[in-house]
Length: 394
Image 1 (cartoon, rainbow, N blue to C red):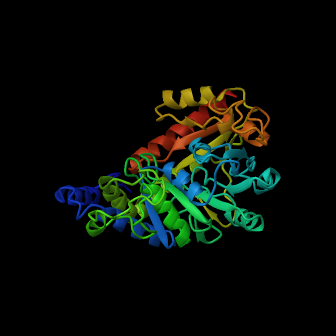
Image 2: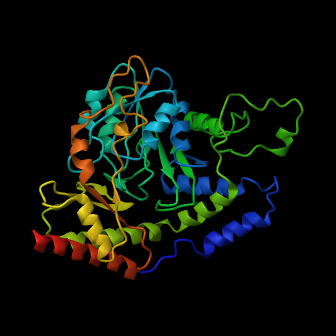
Image 3: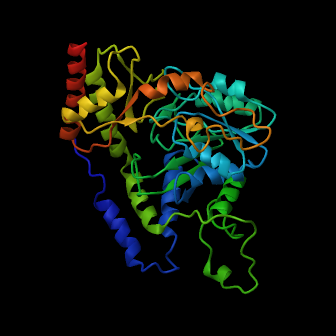
């Protein structure tokens, strides 16, 4: 199997935009096509395109009424953008620990983190695997909380028969260059709530009065009226450029093959590591389908060699390197020891999420964005060779 990361369809749609000369009469049409198709694919009523997948979170939180004095529960093991968006909305992140097997946010830890100031939960589909969204949605309903799925790493994953992105009150996706589908940069928010979508669209579009959930384009007749009062609220210019929308639409139409090639890479890695007792894969529970943005193994802390030794040997043998997990967000210099409000319920420092702290240093993130069978097999063979080297050495 071989897949072109960027193919003829992407070029065709980009040329369609360029041929329009960016005339105002045609501007926005590609975004409209993308939004309609994306909402349909992910079983939602409304989709709103953004310049990136952090702006999506920011806008959705503000639109849901999250602001100063509020707390939002987030996982510590993910890209810090999730927590940064909470801070950008004026609220305070509260970190819930992770499940020791799936490494996604633990519903039990979420319950422990609830307070009278909790306004929302942002569960992250980590590495392509969703957390227990049904359980988290039940918690949200019981405590009147906004559930915002962060699905930046999960396209076409499933949770108990439902496509990931269709469970929470709203869901956020990223089209950054490493993601399953990409436009270089970009993002999308999807929801079934029309009033919420109206507010997200306004925040996305400078607070323009004329935009709505399904309408991101302002008509010429409206904008040329000298009496038109443009800005009903203060918003950001978070709109996706038409060229990015063109590429994203083509990628969306090819999404099945783009996800399938990554799944093939993950299966090859899994086969290479099969039977190795000191490399533990992320656990995929019954009822879940993993999208494999990356394939991750946890190195046992009991082995007589380090994470760095393993990576170095993998590269020496011809492997393409591997990533470490992100530093836990609350241990990043930007947050560690900082208090963002006088009544902040957590101190950001070591010991806050012991399960996450015990797992994060040992995670080996193997890339799955290889688009030919030969490259996939080569990386899997290098993993097998590395395992064999350390097995014999031990």
